[in-house]
Length: 275
Image (cartoon, rainbow, N blue to C red; front, side):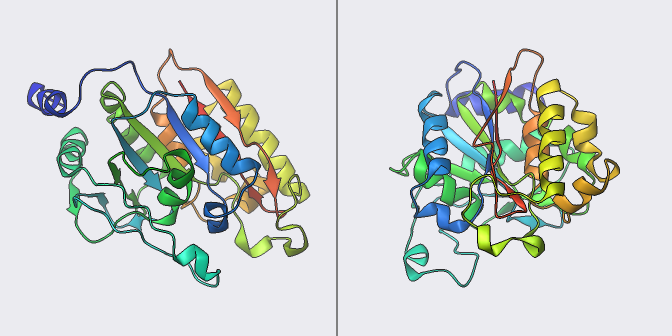
């Protein structure tokens, strides 16, 4: 990052106290229209931090070859799911985009080539949580995609380049689920808070301990941490947003957990605040 990059950011956003970073376990899209303890947790998290100048969201649901950022002025609300009630498809989250911030984000990530995208929008990994946190949809939002061709360490290191945004009042959110195995859902307990298979209970205990101890090496090398983690993370899409969040932690940042529950046997809603 050079002085011109810093100046570009300064031109658009004033210096602020360093913003926290959030990883949000977003769970089912139905959380967008239901009232439960998890959406209450999202609202509480927003109430406890300064109102952002803008939001950068890294969602499990934008998994691409290469890295992209949304660069349109008015991103569409994407209903990237099926089989849910019409009320969920009727939800719109008309937050403005931030084309200049998209350009600046791409600059910060050099020499990684970042494509400015004008087709995507806001997927439910973003709007299903932002709807509760900032219901007025009056804060500019951009999304950054996850390059599926890269290993976890790459994403951890890439996130560090975004830290300057925190000093400009920009809230960075990773949205996914630490434990996310849809093939092993216990449908009888899909809405039962605390319901988890033995392997999910073990995976939650391990990952929580690593998070609170600052043992991010084990988090990054999750595929080498035993069978419970292999069941918990059968695919990396919902897990990698956590890696971005952890990559943004500095030595002065505290880390805390909220919404820390299992549901449906094979999902966790555990969320993380850094800073």
